[in-house]
Amino acid sequence: MIWERKRFDGRLRSQTVRRSRIVGLAVAAVAAGALLVDSILVLRHLAWLAADPLRFLIALVAFALLRPLLAWPATLVGVAAGYGFGLAGGLIGVALLGVTALPPYLFARRVGGPEVSTNSRVSRVLAAADRVRDDAGDRRTVVAARLLPAPSDAISVAAGAGGVPLRPFLVGTVVGEGPWALAGALAGAELGHLSAGTSVTADARLVAVAVVVAGLLLAGPVYRAYAESRG
Image (tube, rainbow, N blue to C red; front, side):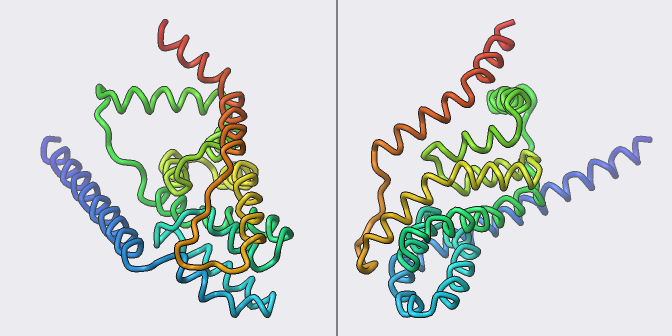
């Protein structure tokens, strides 16, 4: 029995080390991409594709898939869609934000979350988050998280590591990212060109409204989780 336990512990440690190496390599690749590639420069060179809508759409899909690897803001997907297709690009941008969220989600779902001590503060925070999610449901939780002005890829990774099913994740992403995609498309449509130094910022009113809506969606579950933790 002791030998079997040691063998099991050895396999567990080996799996943990292998998982840590995979995560480390992924982080290193993302960091290298973010440092070596300028997103605005790439978008500017995509301008010649806009003459052919189908060709531009194919390029947008490729752009959405590669974006997480290069750690570019998800808002740029909506901006690029608006730049190529005008205001109608908002709908394309919404769909592509679902596409661009898949790589980090699937990666985190495959690798899993890190091991956390059961008595740590992080463990208690995660347990509270799980209670909120169980109360609100996966779809509602993802919508609220997407409405917050938080890094899109961090939310995707958290959802994947937390075991959120694919369908609620995609639906919640499309609904929650919708306002940001439409705002990005509007900005892209208004840009005559994407020049170096151009920055895309969300209107403060949009951010405020999105935060309020996210708060309303989770207010009840958060309060009940807090009341439960207080006994």
